[in-house]
Length: 503
Image (tube, rainbow, N blue to C red):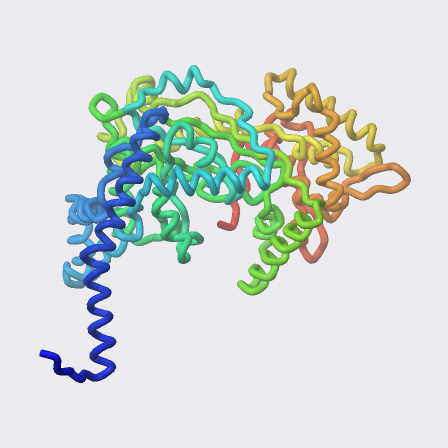
C-alpha cells in the first residue's frame, strides 16, 4: 500500500490538464455561467422598468435557436434548393453556406454588456470628444407610439461616431439593433458588436442566397418588434449633402407587412450633425477619382499620429473638444397609417409596385430628416466664409454676418442650436476651431477662406444648405484635380438628384 508508481512526465502533465479541464467543466464554468446569468437577469429586470420600449423576447432568445430558426425558414429552404439547382451543387453544400451566413448575421445580444459596458463606453467617448446635445425631441409625439410596435430610427449618416452617439442618447428609451458593414469584422470588435445586438451586412453582395438569408433575418426581427436603427443613405455622406435613399433594408422590413394583421412599424426620423467629423478629409478624398489610393500602413500611421497628437494636447491641457454633436428626433411616421392613407398593402404587392411604394416612403423619410438636421456653429461659419470667399472681411463683420444668418434661419422656423445667452462665445469657439485647422487665412485683421480648404468648408456648409434659398449660393467642392479646376455643385440638387458617391 505504500509502494510508489513511476509514470512518465508527459503522462503526469496530461493527467493534470485533464483534471483541470474536468474541474473547469463541472465546477467553475457552470458556477460562472450561473453568476453571469444572474447578473444579466438582474439588469434586464432593472432596465425593463424604465425603458419606453422594452427588450423583446426575440433578443433574449439563445443565439443558436435563432440561427436554427433562420436556417430552416421555409423561404430560405426554397432559396437553398434553387441555388443548388442553379449552381449544380449538392443541397448540403448550399445548406452549409446558409449556416455560415446565418452565424455571420445573427447577433448575440447581451443586456449586461449593452447597458453596463456599452452604454458607459459610448457615454464617455461621446462626451470626451464633443459637447453632446439633443436639440429637438417631441416627447408628446413619441408618447403616442404604441409600445408594442416595431420602432425603427431612420437617420442620416455623417460619421462612424453616429453609432456611438445615437446608441448613447437612445439608451434611456430603448436598445438599438444596427446593421454594420464589413469594417467591423475584426477581432475583438466583431464579438463586442454582436453582443451589443448589431448584425453584419455585406453591403454590396450580389449573392441571392445571402440576400435571402439577410432578408429573412430582418423580417424575423421586425415581426418580433426588435427596435432597429437604419442609415437611410446606406453609407457615409462624402460631400456633406444627403445622399439618395437606399431601399434594401426598408424593403426587407416591409416586404411581408400586413397593415391590419401585423404589429405596426413606426419610423422615427433622426437628424445628426457635428461641428467636426474626424473623417471629413478622407470622405472628400473619395470624391476625387484621380486621388492616389492610400495603403493600409498609411491609414494606420495617420490614425495613430492623430490619436497621439491629441493625447499629447490632453497631457499639456491644451486639448479642446471637437465642438457640438447634436441629434434631433422628428415626428414619427407609421407604416400602417401610410398604407391606409395611400390604399396600399406591401405584403400583397408585386416586386416592382412594392419598390415604387417603398421608394416614395423612403423619400418621405428623407425629407423629414432633412428638416431636422441640426444647425450648428461651424456649419454656420463655413457658410458665411464660402459666401464671402472672394473678398476679405473683418472678424467683426464675419461674426455679424453669422448672427444675421442665425436670425434669417430662425425667421424660417428653423431650430438653431446656438444658445442666445452665450451666442458670441459659441461663435468665437467655432471660429477658433476653423482657425486651428487653418480653414481661413488672416492678414492685417482681415479674414478670407483659404482656397485650398474650400472642399472641407463646403462639406460642413452642405449640412445646412437645405435651409437657404435655392439660388442664394453655390457650394464648391475642391476635388484637387491636376488641372486645379473647381467643380461647382449647385445646392439645388438636394431637391433633385444628389451627386452619386463612390461607395
